[in-house]
Amino acid sequence: TRKGFLLIMIWWSLACGLHGLATSVLFFGVARFLLGVGEGGGFPGITKAISEWFPESERSTAMGVINACGNWGAVIAPPVIALILAVANWRWIFLIAGAAGLLWAFSWFKNYQPAYAHTGLGSEERGELAAVIEYSRSKPSTKGISWFGLFRYPQVWGLFGGKFLSDAAWYFYLFWLPKYLHDVRGFDMAHVGAVAWIPYAAGGIGAIFGGWFSSWLLKKGYSLNASRKIALALSASMMLVALVISRVPIGLAVALFSVAFFGQQFWSTIMMTLPADVFPKDSVASVAGLEGCGGALGGAIFGRLVGYLLDHGVSYAPVFVAVSFFHLTGFVFILLTFRDVRMLSVAGESGRA
Image (tube, rainbow, N blue to C red; front, side):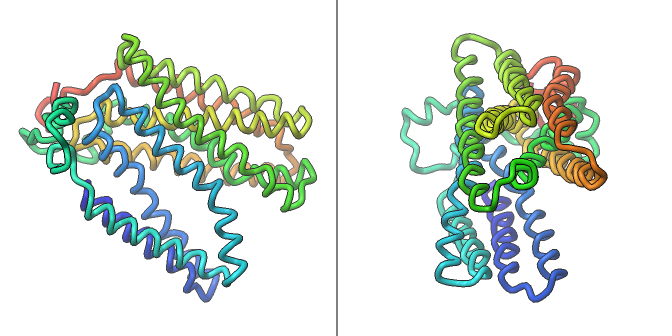
């Protein structure tokens, strides 16, 4: 985890800085591609780190806090970018962000250790984390699950399919919200900037609340299976607000967008916690990576479809209707493939009962 995340962040940081050196559209496009490759390793690494530090009763809360930071980063970034542009050109945005990533990577490598190897833990903390430490220190008894072997498990297909659908909606909101406000609601760029941060802030709150809610259910005596599925069902139901976004006044529309962002990040926190709940430690990051792959494919494919539909005279209204049901459909995928949310016992491969 420590070395893998270091390599991921060095790759991402160099790719980010590469944008600032771009001399053509092709150069810039290659830099974008390389950035995406590096970014794709982020949450698999995070999921693995969480599995090395947090018991199941606290995993979703920790993931919620981390997930929220991504949303709040989107709130903080625009004024920081504006400040950089006030004193330098656009290239410095990428160069400074890349340098910040390298500094973070150095700090990560210097300070991170799994709980069992961390010298700063006292005896009381080690006692509280005894189950996590035992799990992290255990050695695989046999060869780990292969990439192709992972596809034998219906839970992998559930995560892949559920993320494919939910991130199709999420990417739509991310990339099309400013254009919708501009084209349909008549906002100029200043007005877009004035209100577009609000849903992202709501998403950050949703991420924390979703993680806390599932942990709260566990502490109230609900099983891991029930606590995760109740949270997913509740968050999926929130996405139905998109059904009426195109029919309400703009103030209410922004409020409904905020509910949708809240629900999406509530959902995302639980979905990203599931690999650590279910798969052996040797496979957690691989499964999280496949889940992220499903999400990215869903976003790419649906984004192209939305562009085609809008170019051919279709309004935003049916698109909002479609995305309102993606999470509920994804929840059905989870119910069909996760009969019980529990640590798998993988016969003949690394894992534990």
